[in-house]
Length: 132
Image (cartoon, rainbow, N blue to C red):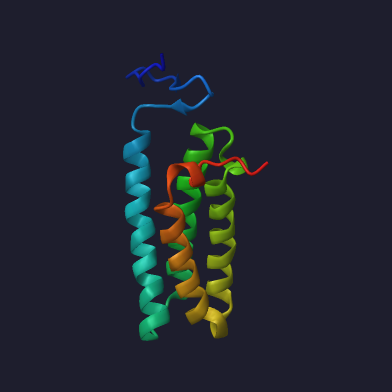
């Protein structure tokens, strides 16, 4: 039977497949998500309303996104072998391209947004599928 996370300050194994957890990981990921969505709102203003600050909003999205990915990858040792991990790496590359390639921002913005929603809300059997 899987063990539940404890309040000890050492990683707790959650599942027999090697998933790890620590107290506060969920809260930390949610705080990073708040910053990530703020970055998305800023990038949206840049792309859709012609506002400035693409590099700053992109940096906020990138740093918070990398934090989320790092926590997810630590908790799930096969994260980068699964569809969600590889899809996330692709999203990171596309956001960097979106920030530096001004002429392609609008189509890339809509593609990354649609791809992100599709990946996030895909059924678990697809998101967690091992690709290699």
